[in-house]
Image (tube, rainbow, N blue to C red; front, side, top):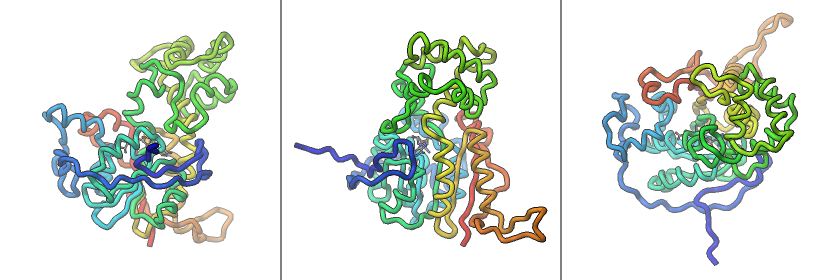
Length: 368
Ligand SMILES: C[S@@+](CC[C@H](N)C(=O)[O-])C[C@H]1O[C@@H](n2cnc3c(N)ncnc32)[C@H](O)[C@@H]1O
């Protein structure tokens, strides 16, 4: 009998609960060289003077556009991913950022909790051989993942948060209200909590809280009440059923579908996106070598606020309080912020890739 070996390392039993897992063995392919990538040079450090990366390209090349990494130029400038550096990409996704980093010579450990993403990106980046190591797991477990690989410190950590276009576009995953699918929304299909559980089992108060906090939905109470009314009749099972229920609670005003914010809130809850980010921030700073760079791209104000406050706290050499006679050394001082304000995508990138519109990039460097 042939036992299939996955071409990545796998962290087990996360169930969305970071820090609770153990390792399964290695099954890395040695890496068969693929034909040269026509876009590779676009991403070399210093080699991307023209940011107009894709216009007029044939379809086969424009497929690469699907993977265009958000704020790639700024990430390259911050990380300087030259040979000899080792970078942990905690959100491998389609492998867009990893590819850029690899292309410039860095070694990359590409982590994703989504097995399908890992499979796809693993194939796409196969030609980099030993330079690239795909790992399945939650980035909140990066300490366990890195220790399992025998890696003590890395020179860079990248987190490009949220779901990928691939996950949104995959009609079977339940992330989108535009495609009918069972209510799932798990990035990691080994986790127990699904959108169906949230929608059909969580209390009215819990639903209101997540719709308000994670979705910033003004009609959170109405939406929750409509869900409770519907599920009294029968469980809400699919994305389109849920979208129809929400449409009864929230009138359609602008071009945005009324269920947009509710779907976002449920996704954030299902994947415990804020909880894992909080854990990851602390671990990331510990995992960086002196001079190592942490780059985080957020798409949601709650996430950005969390990142901003945490990084600021770790970047102050001294703390002061009115009741203290004078400033005191900050025991958590560990990083220097690259920019005071978050970086955003330029107009050209936003025009090319609308998803970049709400992206905010924060960069910090580990002190020596
Ligand atoms: C926005 S996409 C990343 C795209 C990628 N940077 C690229 O250039 O193709 C986010 C990816 O991170 C993964 N992800 C999100 N949260 C994660 C977590 N806590 N641990 C591991 N992977 C996560 C998702 O499954 C998704 O594939």
